Image 1 (cartoon, rainbow over the protein chains, first blue to last red):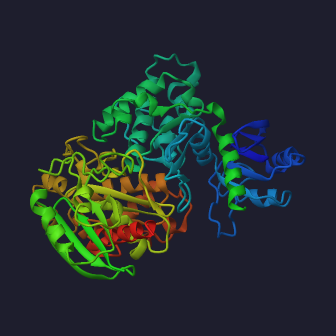
Image 2 (image 1 turned 60 degrees about the horizontal axis):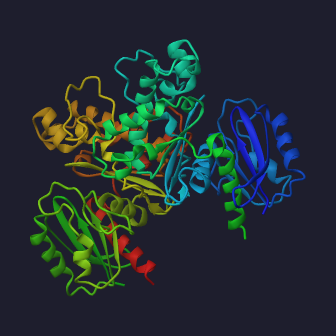
Image 3 (image 1 turned 60 degrees about the vertical axis):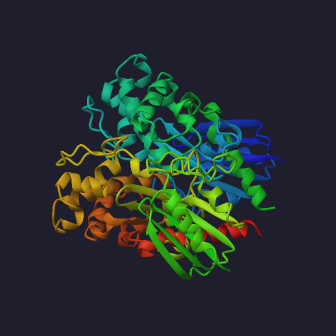
Length: 293
Length: 293
């Protein structure tokens, strides 16, 4: 099988062609610009690839309701040209194959469940913590949708007692994204995160917010694995801080040895590194093909 | 079809016999005592009922892992006699029929999805706010399980600025349950909730905590309906307060008319009143029968 994969991120697009074994034969990456510039590159990449299906993990919010006239659209992004953009329709007009369509973070959660850190499990939560904070949820062997799709990057968080920063989410001020995104770190410390030393107090404040969100996610959805990706999580000193704080927050309430005894295998970096989203898109393409057989 | 239903609550048990159309022919209720007293009553009730399957929604935490030797057990409750109690095994030794088994709150969510306020939808979140705070999640047409099961009654919450109460959860102090359960209201105001007038400041503080938890649940799981049951929610003045505060918290971020324009149909009391759990147990029994065909 030849399956196309598109990770449509807010900053860059990655397109690839792979197979049902999770082997990526080829991939290409380019900056996300106006769709009039970006989409022709996507179409040109896949023109001679003979994909039997294509999966797309897209930045959002996106329309995931199969019965909506705007299914397959990006909805309300501030990115020029992309608001109400008929992403799926555009590709369908060029390729008559089945398409898989979900958020970039749901795709990443699926990629990790099929070929990554949550392989063999039927639930996981994937966080990306970078320019924004996004969340994908895989539960009972399927990705979570509903009214829209998970937007757990914006959950309310309790302030760290030593943090005077007021938050920078344009909607919620001091929600998780407002306090813990890469830009929030930079605004708080007047310095990019990767310039701060690993023992800087910035990281325990950062871990406080992430651990709190994870505590909520674990109590709410009881995932079998929690995966933390994105630029901020390149600061690997965060992992032990987050794990300790999650244990402290839960305080023995969830009786599961994964949390009580083996938390270093429970809250982990992505098994697929920076490629969870691309492999997830491949898995979405594969699902679309199987559904259409 | 004749399907048995058991709502095994921490305070009382309700047993019933019904059919696949959600018609409950008969039911009985008795206090939850030591299993040596309670279980014989359950067994005696079903002895001549000719149930073809039985569904159980149980207080928890419970073991839901089909491959565990303790599947069907209540796990770590402080209730005398019930910790590590083999609930399912006990019933199986008396009735050779398929059994459905889930938490009482997951059962309530299922009951509401099949015959109640979320009928026809494939996702909902059910909260019970009473002696404790519990949560059941139905997502993508199935109940959410994972490491254990949803325990969203214990999520961290931000303090209300005018609330000096320190919380009473033995595990987490000021988590949702610690701040918003019936006993928390009584401890804060030195008076039972139902004694407080509807315009008492207690209710806006209560709504603050519930709305915050709902905001998190909506952002996380994007349910198509949020259902609030339990003793505290008999205070119907809470509903408009909670709805307004959820809208204020989300601040237009989730573009769904259910939230922006019709929130009074989105955050609702149980369609089945106090019987969501019992009807959910009936639905669990029905699922078990269908799975065993």
